[in-house]
Image (cartoon, rainbow, N blue to C red; front, top):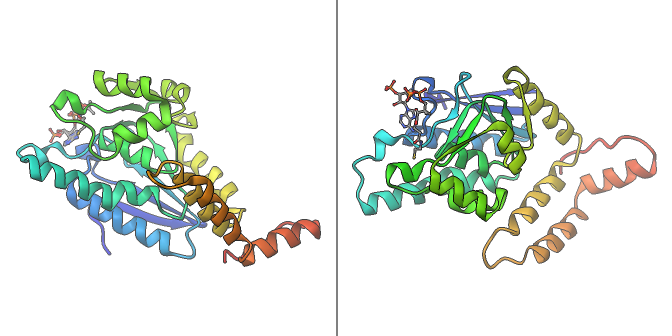
Length: 260
Ligand code: COA
């Protein structure tokens, strides 16, 4: 599929998806959300892609939010549908992918931009990054999971303050809050993401997929995460990766995982 609003580049086991509407600070319009869904789905299904990196084009923004011009005249039903569709196509979707997804936050990550970064499995930021959920300054609330994922990541009190003030925090404060795992200079951001990706790729992709679903189970209503973990743990024993990983350890060599 030819994309108009994003780029998807594959190299050395990594698919890097770049949101590419720099003149609108990479704001997420409907078409961009659909393209992201398609590109993420493709990368997740590809046997070659071991890690996905999501970033924004240019040095100014990761994503400056949902595209305000698209929903400014929506009514109650349309507003509800916008949030539900977005969560289904992108935010819940990315969180539940079996391939690890790293957000490389390279500038403003506001509203839907921060919500996208938070739906990724973990986040790195460049030192110029600014993050916030400014929705209440527009008379609306975060609708792409922000009210749920922000307190999970930074704690309820900090999340409440960020949501109520609609303010932005800088990269170091985001690091201090645990919202991002690492902060580096802009030109080091993608190299760091790729370095972490290469560490991930040395491990069993089927075990990683089981681990993602077990960790996510902790945040799902009505799901017993411990039980999910027990089942996921058991599943690993039926994989070729498990045989290879344990055999390689006993033979004192590096494992060469087939990813099955
Ligand atoms: N939706 C639609 N367009 C957006 C956008 C968004 N969320 N964020 C930025 N843009 C557009 C601007 O309208 C402008 O387009 P134009 O040149 O056609 O007028 C362009 O991107 C550049 O933005 P601009 O505001 O001129 O840049 P700035 O450096 O002065 O300010 C921000 C940067 C991020 C502080 C400012 O763009 C902003 O506050 N954006 C909205 C953030 C927000 O509320 N997001 C949550 C949405 S629910």
